[in-house]
Image 1 (cartoon, rainbow over the protein chains, first blue to last red):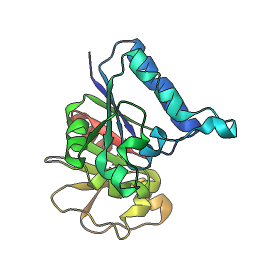
Image 2 (cartoon, chains in turn cyan, red):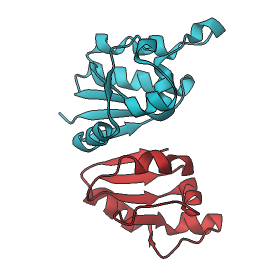
Image 3 (tube, rainbow over the protein chains, first blue to last red):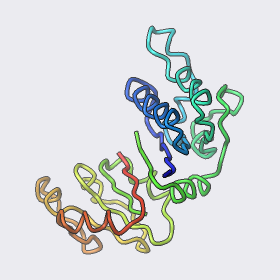
Length: 114
Length: 85
């Protein structure tokens, strides 16, 4: 089966939540699925949207490991640029270098952006 | 890998992740970014001719103009593509 990489670059919100639904579907169908958070996409790993009565992106992401989407990565460069520390993130994401992100893009069969 | 840029703000994040034999194609509003974009000459750059014309943008000589058929050929030629929106 073809491997899929989700390239997440957008701020949390409604669009982000729809992309998460898409990732869950990939997981359900047992497609080899990886997710990488870069740029402003790293903001999806923080925060609690429920405080303003919005469906929470960070919490929705917590469902991914349950759907067998376990290859979660985040660009350490994007985190550093935004002053985000590893301790701020609850999700089990692996911090990787920019060149490792490039490698991910190139070694998956399909790349889906958000 | 083929990088498809449809948003001028995506040029910078895209250029961070270029690798050997990659090519770039500008489509839609992405062509606005061709003005003043710093592009590495190692990577071939294409832009959709009609999208440039529709926006009154003229590309520099470093950019190869492409029609829809040539765009499809690029997509088929590369084993995978990523769309930067």
